[in-house]
Length: 360
Image (tube, rainbow, N blue to C red; front, side, top):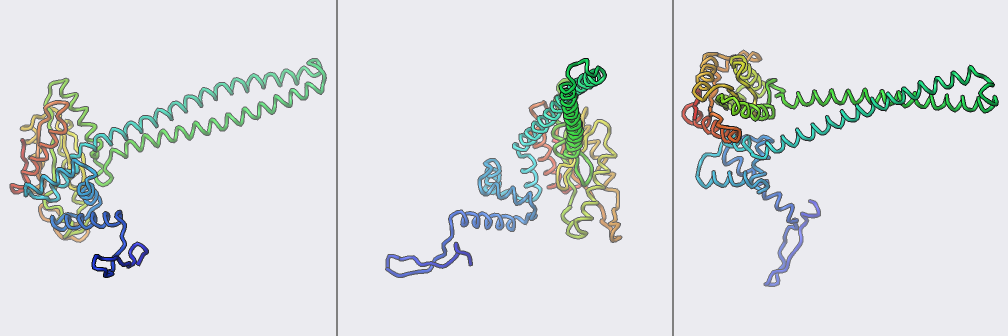
């Protein structure tokens, strides 16, 4: 037992001594929060994942007022709190866009600093090269002139000093070349990091970060051209059962298969991304919600006709279907609201039987 948990005694009004546990307020607060998180997860039968525990803890502790309000309103209205709803709340967190913007700004600053350093190094290298050439020519002239340039001892000292300066300049040039090479490598690494930061490592589709940036630019373009723009959320039906029955590796292969059919059957005017978990998001540029529904429903039907097999075990998955919700983006300032409407449409598709697409 630790010092903070050792028994002590307190004096009551009756003069009797009773044992107590000395626990700091901070420790007790953490214990209470952990108990509340555990009770919440068990009460609503939620998955024990890092993202879930983070969201629940942030809401129950009051660290995020918006999340805390959403949880309280949901419970007070006696509406279902399930994994689908929790994913929606976390996904539509308004602070996420700000964090992504800040990351973009930091990467832009880093890239600009590396560019400026490379320019400075190149300029300095050019100047030292000119100085090195001038000093080399001077040494050659003094050596060839012999004693005509002055007393022999002084000439030798000047030549030695010039050669030392020349050696030093060459060392500086070598260091600058190495620094420039390292800077170029850092810029290449940053460029690769930008690409990797936009890619979901399981499905190799663009991720949420890439999608939200593309949606912003597409909404601006749609407003300029007057063309319609729609967004859709897609969610694999009964995915938890796949993981529970066949294991998470098999579940990953199912996600890769769904990603492939969405990406393969989408047209060039569509942008497909993995939004997290078993959820995908599709942007339909030039499609109103009815045209987007027709397009996505065709992909849904194609997937529903397939009988998938777990190649590792030979056991059939059976039919793996997905549900979808679609909404039309009404303007540049409507992107987040459109995502919320699409998410609500997806929730409706799930609630009314799954394996269907709903547009609102």
